[in-house]
Image (tube, rainbow, N blue to C red):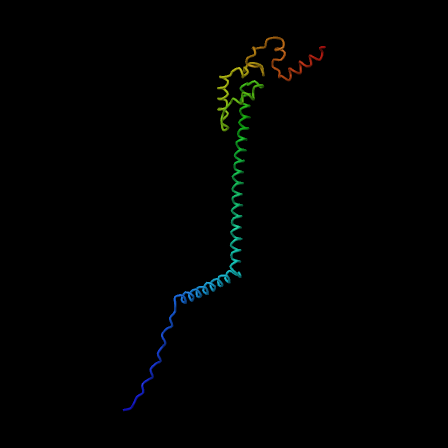
Length: 195
């Protein structure tokens, strides 16, 4: 029989070295760190900056600009609110001034004593949006309450309603139908000749 040779037995593989959990953790940490560094480097290259501090500076500058823009927007809103408030106040003042003119005109038409015009006008309480008819109604109501403040329509201009009709003597006859200025001028002229 021939001896056949058998293949040599493979050398026994050494038993695997025992790896501790601590060694595994270190290896994993290093791999993570290298992976983070690689990812961070790729991100920095993509953003076109050298390091993380440059990214932080860009983000901080952007946030400051956003905050400043918010402040400007808020300031603009406040200015718009103030302008609206001032416009509303100006409209209200204009409406009140127009009402005063309309009331004064209606009081003159109703023969209110000129020396009492401003006092009587204060007694007329109507809304600034009141019509001329509403103003006249308020005046008629007041005229019923205080008739002595209104001149008689058939009397001379400026003759108070409580003055006797046609005057009470020579002086009244001289000034009837004249304005106070005309009557005063005549009186002054007549006094020049007296000692």
